[in-house]
Amino acid sequence: MKKFLFLFVFVFSLFSSCISDETTTYYLIRHAEKERTDEKDRNPNLNEKGLERAKKWAVYFKDIELDAVYSTNYNRTQQTAKRTAESKNLKIKSYDPRNMYDSIFKNDTKGKTVLVVGHSNTTPVFANKILDNNEYPNMDDHDNYSLYIITLKGDKKTSIVKKINR
Image 1 (cartoon, one colour):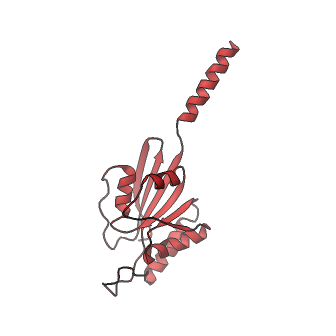
Image 2 (cartoon, one colour):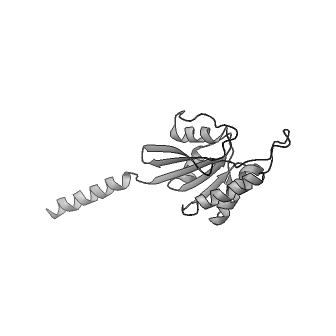
Image 3 (cartoon, one colour):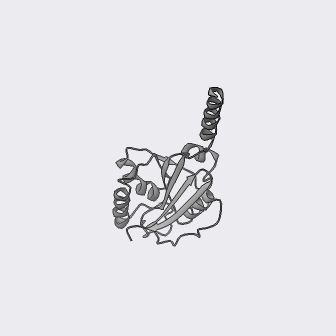
């Protein structure tokens, strides 16, 4: 009887360890408001309203434990991510928006809570890649307040979009 009980406990433990209940959470935002005075400037900085919004994002994430902050390598995204990253004592990691959610990114972020700062044409695309469907269209060029929250737990994927600090 003891051997049977031991075998049952061993098999149950092995089976339980194979079932992943690890949770990965992605917070995806678009950069804050940018300078629009020079239409030819492909790498503008944030304007005053954008700098204020970047502060508001840091306040929003104050009570959320983040393991990493990712941003594209543009002034406006880096500046948006900076306050939040600094408040969490994290360095901003760069990602290439042409190669989002690849196997390296998936592996590096598995089981973590991550903020990703992108653009109006990359943030919903990134969300769709994580979800493996086309749920979200591109954002309006003046939408700097949408927050995509995607949670992965095992095979289950959930998502929501919130409007923050309009």
